[in-house]
Image (cartoon, rainbow, N blue to C red; front, side, top):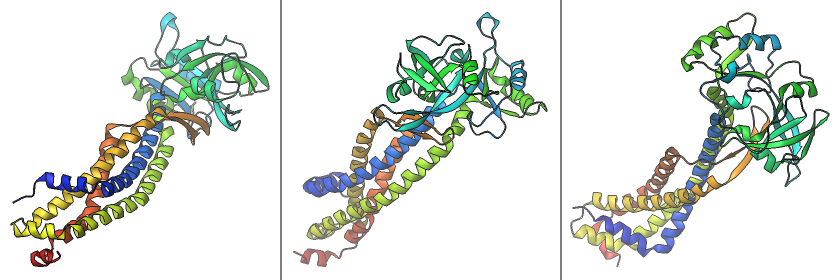
Length: 388
């Protein structure tokens, strides 16, 4: 004969204060767990969304990022001649030879300096990134000292707004527009004419070559040809894979940090749940004896107390996850360890993070309630009834 589920729920409601306090501790642990996972997922998604599957990035072999790469002009011309490069309107190849360098800019609020990516772009760079939309001003004129800034740069850095002036490369540059690249890393960049930027920074080589594939299935053949050409010392990656590699180190660190903090905090939450359940068993000794005398099996009592503890964990998990979901409204910035530039991104709650958080909360409830439930189930009927 099994004990009704309502029995466990009524007992939790009777002990409202201890239920709320214990569930709050579990909610805090789940909040920390979910937020750190959301942070890692937000960073990963921002960098992966930066790339397009049909775009190919060509950089120097062994270079971890565009900042560390160098592609000579002759090498870039060879890449531009590959038959897999798509042709756009007007017969123009959908290929851009780009420069990526870092500059130091002060932030608007704190005045603290941080690294910002400057990207030298060509005529078709915007066409290669349909997610990038100009929202204010206009595009820079070719051959001019004009730039456009990503939305995050315009909002966060001094001199990054429309009509303002930036000083780098021993020249003044006028911000003539602001672009919005959605949930991508381009929002944390400044774009200008590649030839002017190469001259200003005295860079004789490009950082990368980006092109659109004529046919997505042609990637393997063009990669094989580029990487085995004796005239080149380059490697080719799909743009999505390239930016996924950029996020790997940081997301791994965030996940390890999150798991470490969660384990530390969860120990306290489990102990709190255990104390709560032991107190519940002590206060209900006579009640447990009565249940046994009425014919309820030890396994039924064990299940009833474990169910009570599981519900306590689930309640805490749902509350923690509810408050963690509001972190999606927050945008933060950190240094991208691959490029050493500041990158702004948001928290991202996924279904996988949600069910893992709730599963973890149930585990804490089970761990906290198992020993007290075993004690309740193991009580002697006569001794329990005499405790009155």
